[in-house]
Length: 401
Ligand SMILES: [Zn+2]
Image (cartoon, rainbow, N blue to C red; front, side, top):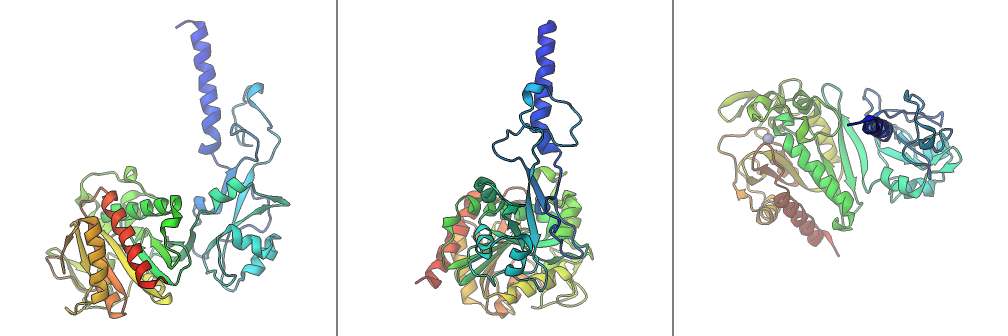
């Protein structure tokens, strides 16, 4: 390689650095003094606080203020322009949508439209709202669409170690369905990645959700257990899991008090519970754990018609039932998921389960099933997509006109 080659190589390197830099080093520059206030006790996650984007029509190569490499003049389109910051507001106790709108100088109607809110009183503490204005300027439509996908993220509460337990809510129909992943944390991390995969699918195809349904997806019911294995608080993927040996992740099954959160519900509850033939903790009392309290309070607080818990790994669909009392709505739900997915059927696992969440829900008159993925790595996407769509169709038929 001659001198020319070396020069071309250097130029490409500088170019690559310039292209990569704005994404790899986000800088938050709030333009509005009334910045979003995080929920007390929570650690705000970067994806929820602010996203830096560049004002249109400036190219993506705009240097940020902390940039230390001085780009060649030909690659600096408009360095003086200030980046947009997509402003988010976390709803606090006692706030109304109108008050928030006034606080940011946005009309109530525009705030509702941007955040897909059907009725002005349909907001919740912990809900994260997109503020469409930056100063006097409306954010470009494409940025608003990207910033406000067809779901709302609401923090239901916090884990023992203070990590948020979030739900993603699509639609606003009268029938509420809930899909829950990760109650067994890092040991069953693929139940969490499946939940995110369903969120991505429905974000791309929101019309697949019937108008009669409100769908809530809780990807991570045991965030401390997941953190123990993945070492990460943002969205987890298979790349975050250090070992291929599922047993290496077993400590991540439990919450930070070493309690199995699917042995802590008030149906056949026992402090001395089992996982296979190993004794494990069901907690000091039913609902002794904050994670199960958060889930219970949410499930009883809305008119939930059906709940699916994703677990791994037994390739089964199990209808909830408490005290050996068959629960017909849960059996109907299980049959729909099983037939579409092709998973096997079982009325129970091979060892006694105490304090199970789905079993407890049947006592509240709520249809609930446990879906066991095939292994500890894969999301069995075709099978579970078919199962999810079958369940949406089932509740559309039950509750549609
Ligand atoms: Zn499990």
